[in-house]
Amino acid sequence: MQLLQSPSSLNLSLLSTESLSNRGLLSAKKIFQISTFNCSISSQRHEGIVRLLRNPSTSSPVTTRATPAEAGASTILNSNAEKDVLTALSQIIDPDFGTDIVSCGFVKDMHINEALGEVSFRLELTTPACPVKDMFEQKANEVVAMLPWVKKVNVTMSAQPARPVFAGQLPTGLQTISNIIAVSSCKGGVGKSTVAVNLAYTLAGMGARVGIFDADVYGPSLPTMVSPEHRLLEMNPETRSIIPTEYLGVKLVSFGFAGQGRAIMRGPMVSGVINQLLTTSEWGELDYLVIDMPPGTGDIQLTLCQVVPLTAAVIVTTPQKLAFIDVAKGVRMFSKLKVPCIAVVENMCHFDADGKRYYPFGRGSGSQVVQQFGIPHLFDLPIRPTLSASGDIGMPEVVTDPQGEVARTFQELGVCVVQQCAKIRQQVSTAVMYDKSIKAIRVKVPDSDEEFLLHPATVRRNDRSAQSVV
Image 1: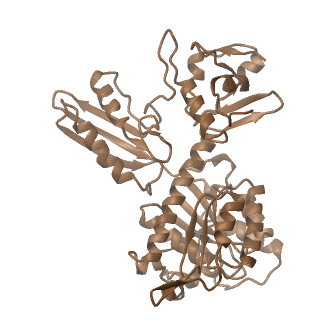
Image 2: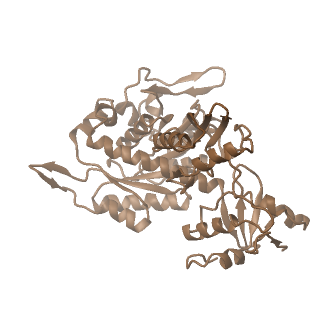
Image 3: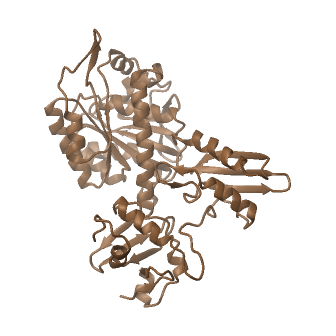
């Protein structure tokens, strides 16, 4: 295996898969186009590698990320004025990625008229539901306006077009969906459909394009919980695809809208129905598709996980021990299928009466799931008659009472889902894995088919943290 010596004094050793076959050397300049390694390695190792890659060579400075000269971005002139603007914008740190918005590639279409003191640019975020988009816009205006020669600042906000991480592996009907979120409990009656519907409308309220897929053929809940004007799915006669119905701007697909109510059929037939409903529907461009999973860990669940690469899963449980036992099975299923569980929602936790809080079903099931399986976020939902009633009348609670306690909890859950999905997509786009066959770390460059190899000894030499062990 040939090693490439980097031009820096840290003696970084890299080789590419292409050079491995051709036994040639890869230029150091091309290698340093790798953006970041914030995925499967630990945060300490990530910081060490980023510091390593950002160390300038003795001959010429090298940066780790080519700021915003990407597809769709206009060419940025190499002028002092633009350097001033980019330097000012680099003060704004993305709280999810932990780096500045310039390095994240958010700054696009910059135009500067230095004579008139006018600056205009666009901030392209990863999702229109970004919870800090208003802060970004305000800070961008402030830091650029502080430049002595700037008299006018025009900031435009936008979001990246909807696109899945694994576009080549998806059926045609799902090619323009950015994130697919499974809401699962593996136990019936815990309020999974309530969480799925309210989460979907919370994301829509945050500005995202959202769809809901009801994957329970035996007992579909969506027709009861929402009230669309058209309650039957239609088929496009030309493309033979299914046209989803809509309610309050959210696209809906359920077997309950197929005009047959609940299904009476065997498992293999159900899997075929689910596959057809999900993959042949005209979802269009969606930022989030929320899948209301049926209870259990059987054919339908495995079919869904195999047909589409789920971005993440939200687990719903109740305080009882029996609920924890069933939920644990679902978490293990997602773990085996490489689907990250990003949050736990403990439903029907408590109610308030006479100035006191009561826990009729006990406590600890949700926290036990978090502790045992390392799921980072836990959300509690109270026993609230209005929450149940809103589902029965066909209007989600977050719509009927957008300022209430339940809506605030779902707002926190929505922010969590947005942030965690953004991190997951960043991790996948910059995939890092250790290849035991060649004893090297494989690094996939974002938005590229290129792949590079990093010698583990180099990582270890330059990152002395205790967790940096290969």
